[in-house]
Length: 224
Image (cartoon, rainbow, N blue to C red; front, side):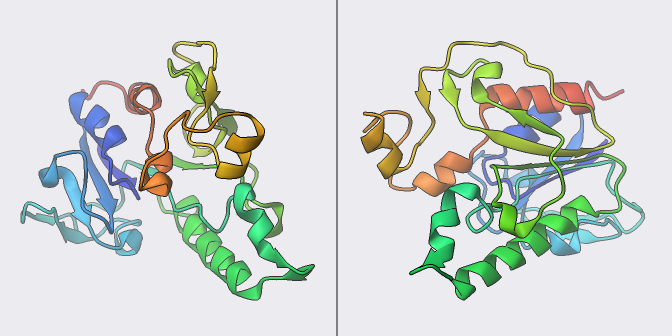
């Protein structure tokens, strides 16, 4: 299958799909950190979502997919900074709605909906819990890293079209919250636990290997 993995610089899911023989491409405005420039498209994904497009992977190779009416599958990880429930506290200042942040949230929702309404039979969108103020469509499923072999909690929602719910592959006991906020860490004595780095936001959004493997195997399977 030809698969677009949108907003993925880590290439975690893309690599697992490639292992199974699929023609998968990661796409992000950032360079890839997964090491496979031949599979990475560094540009705004908007023009690629509905197929009938051409693009260059970051190794300089030209790909003409105009003859492809649409992707066989889209897996998307759109930015969640302005949509997430965790950031809802920034929406209000002195009991008044922060209009600038609210508008950024509306733009983020618009981007999210491009994937949700894409011309593709198999769609998966991953995001944390969103603030109710943005009225996103109902989620299909909630997953946790500890269901896939990683001893962390990090509530993640999936919106699925034409794809089954992910099945847990290895349930383990969660030991801590993955990359919690500073206020959460102080309250729960979790300072320096989980993952604290100089690029916390980017690293927090990376897909756990166990989840990436489950997505590839359960949604795509081995290429025929």
